Image (cartoon, rainbow, N blue to C red; front, side, top):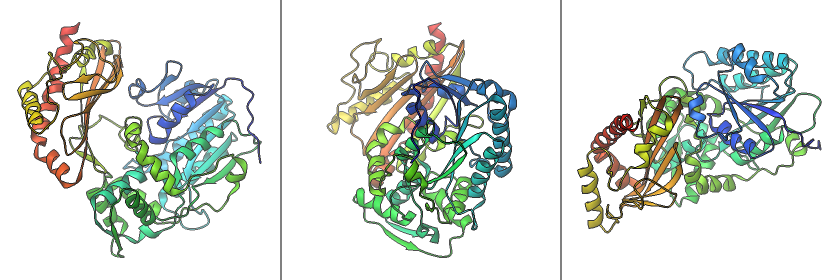
Length: 487
């Protein structure tokens, strides 16, 4: 077994892919250790509420040499956690270019080690173009002479991960599942907790050459097995019928109808999981002091932690990084429904947050207050708390405060306010505000989140969605207008 080499000396670590699912979670781990962190991202504003004051954030991406040269100056270890799965262009060529540029600059900058997360699959047999590209990226990184630790992983199980949200959406929504043959293909899923531990331990593990490690959980299972285990833990009765007529193209359209995936991502995912992704080389077990979890443990932890982790990172974070962020207006993440809107204002973030800080109580909800009062009255009639509680203080908020029929769940001054609904609902609901920006320009994000319970919950959301759209659109517009009075 190779030993972990830890001199105790602080080192500078570059993290790419930080707005993605794995990168966002790895950032928190790295910040908790004795490390200096530098992030390279195309969306610095998306990190303002996520990073500590000691973490540096550089604007740029891995395809531009000048961006990389600035970001890699003085770096000891660099994480390469980017890929082009969400692209509708030639993602293979994009991945080649990005990996070549990254490795070239890393060599010139004197980076000692690159840590890369790739995809598991037998490279001696036929692979999907996505898995083939992931493994090709690893070869390119190694070819420039910088020591590279490549991890090849299969399905990642964790709240918010692409595969877990796919499993949850299918299992929650369909009592009888008419599935393609790929649900029976063997895989070796790994818990997000174990994956992050491998990525962190790779900083200090003592090797003289580049290494490729195949990593997975303790069990070899299929997507069908994962669906059955999820259903068992949720006490759901589900029947799986596998049919041969669903081609990858038809399967991707089917996934787009019943899950949060859109067809382009679904097609690339299916192309990958049609082939076995199991660990053949077990050297990772010998070199790392990690005992991978079983699949029942991984799913149980994902279900236990989903509410806490939802606000951290989800699989779609990285895929939405190109261009303007859309107003989702009803996208389903499994059973979870999210309505997001945003507005830009010409004031600093601390000024933009002031109307949010005063929301509710005597201030009201900025738009159609009579509808909020009516909703509170209906809530009282059905035994809820209604709007009668108001708020404790007109100017200040603290976690745990009541706010009309909401309770403050998270509060970061001048950045974020997250409210949990305590009115009677066929499900659970949150209302979240987040402000990012700098100098005299800010963006206010307003997100309504709803977890419906069964058909009644879904019917509730969609029946009143026209009112929700009216209220939420008007509310963020009025909040934006109110910021001009705060100057």
